[in-house]
Length: 130
Image 1 (cartoon, rainbow, N blue to C red):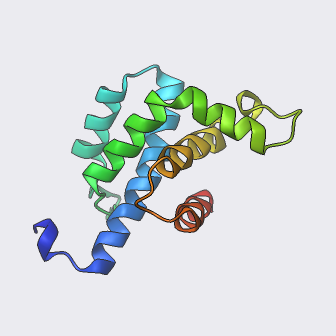
Image 2: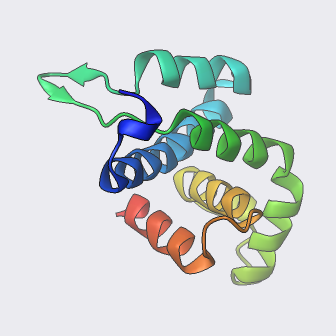
């Protein structure tokens, strides 16, 4: 199905799934020392739309996933500095749970762009956290 044939709801679901996959990919990169290219290809080729124990995973928006992942890696230092300023002084981003750290980095990467309103980005990543 082409991008033009997808409904607005399908596109939103794919974009939401790509956010979850980006957080998972960032977590995996931190714990496995794999490169962004290796992890990106693994997710696109083996996770998007995969079937596990009879349950089909949601297809993701490949472009959105790739952009969030690339920006989270390329702008990690400024994103981490932004997160450090936003959280309690005694809890630097290096001390927080690695899953939450990956979430902050993905959200920070997406907030760098103005094509999605900040309140939507925040809501989407709060949903990922649940």
